[in-house]
Image (cartoon, rainbow, N blue to C red; front, side, top):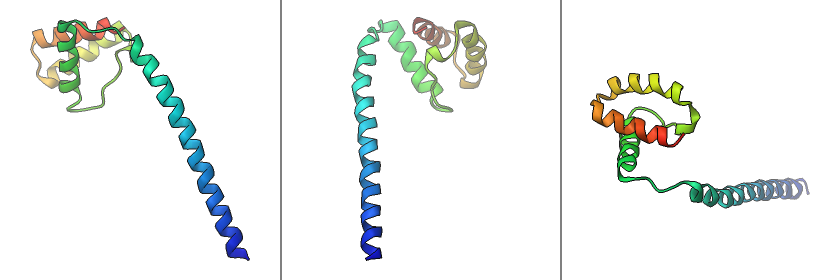
Length: 103
């Protein structure tokens, strides 16, 4: 009798935890398309800057959203990272323009 109750409790716990995850996933999927529609199309120059940011910066660490920092906060970060990533001024200007366009 104890094994039946224990088994029933485990199954109930499993179903309850799975139900909660499905609700959270459904909410995330519902909100994700709305945020994607807000973003405007990037010009070719800004798309190049985004590509450089994604590929150069992600080699060493996770990417931060441009809105995570202010324009003033980004300036020293970009200067420091330019040296570490060994990017020339043209590539760095492209990345900077992309980040500033997203603020």
